[in-house]
Image (cartoon, rainbow, N blue to C red; front, side):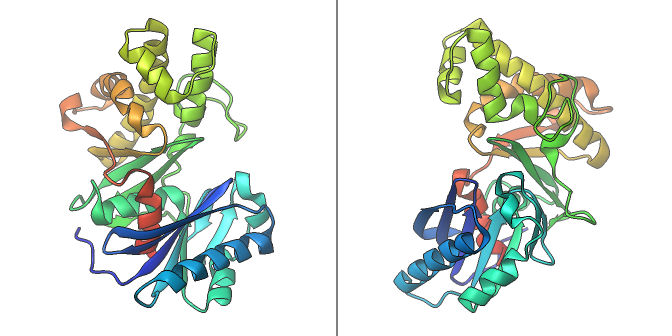
Length: 298
């Protein structure tokens, strides 16, 4: 898949605490802005509209369209955010339509994992690859599924909710179920595991440094999370024969510590395949994947 030449678009990455915006053209972020996320419908829409207008005023070419990456389950066709646990005031709201009315320009909307996958497919590590899964490791675990060179949403927009696949660890998840991958392999979950294992709170980067220095407890945290990650990846591989898994989000820099255990499980559980058949790689676009993907959605 090759990215089309794109006019100047604005990508919006809507998060629970911050709204990140960027002017994007041909895969390059030309200008950026970040504002705090108001937790009220009209205030949030106004914050996004004002930030887009400010960026557009600085642009050297007309703004063509706006794309939004949103957390939670989204109906991309209708432009509706169906359910977002951290932004519940937007649940069931036609966010794309409401923002388009304020800006007088078309607005596209999709789940943030899907947007990140689309960014990587267009101009990142997934460019030219027909089938891959994008995994985002952050406060939660998200995902975006590219099949046959196209975004796969499923009939209700649920495809790619990788973080809520069930693994063997049995820990409770914020969604109310137990065993979800998100409850063991998200950046937040790994930091929680580390606090229990090491008796002190460490950010993920510091935990990685402890593992790099040979700390057995730190390595055990990554091995536990990596094994469960491998269980979930093996289910995707068995169902869809996916061979490439890309990683983004705050947890992507620790992929080197998760990969060995994940590949060991993939080797054991993926019928007819070995670890050598799979690639677990960091995305090329880093934290800009959702922003760039949102712009390409537009």
